[in-house]
Image 1 (tube, helix red, strand yellow):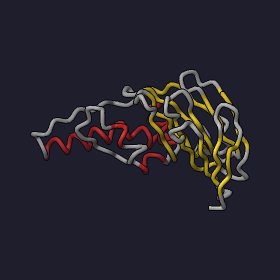
Image 2 (spheres, helix red, strand yellow):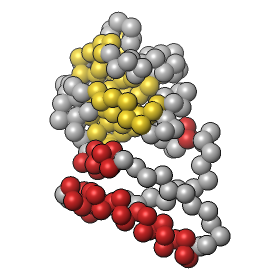
Image 3 (cartoon, helix red, strand yellow):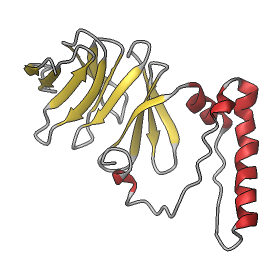
Image 4 (cartoon, one colour):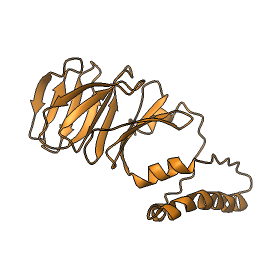
Length: 193
């Protein structure tokens, strides 16, 4: 709730219709069916509930394809609410501009799958982790790699910034590490957890 839904409260959302569409991820032709099936779903809803106002924002098929082909395993919203980071099973972290939902850039280097993303409290840093055994720090505004920290023996599966700016990471090695983002120094290692 706090990481994914709570940051959306300032936006003027009154509801959402979600068409999951897993069966549309089996092939490229099936992915394209999404553009046809969602309006049909909404059309049927409008017939049953004519007094409810619904507007449909059509998505770009390219964005639908990229979202369907890669499962999102973690996401984070920047503190100012203007950027979303998604970690996907394709090994990339994607940055999206909000509220428009435009794809800004992809950040790679996470191994087979990106697993964790976290924005610093000031939004100046994005920490990422994945099936690689290291953490990467990016400048989300430019996509520039600011640092890489090694210390976990397996996947990096969880990331968070403490209120004082300390980066906290958890991994498949069952350990939690605390880091100084500016230097990459490991302050502590807790575990096994």
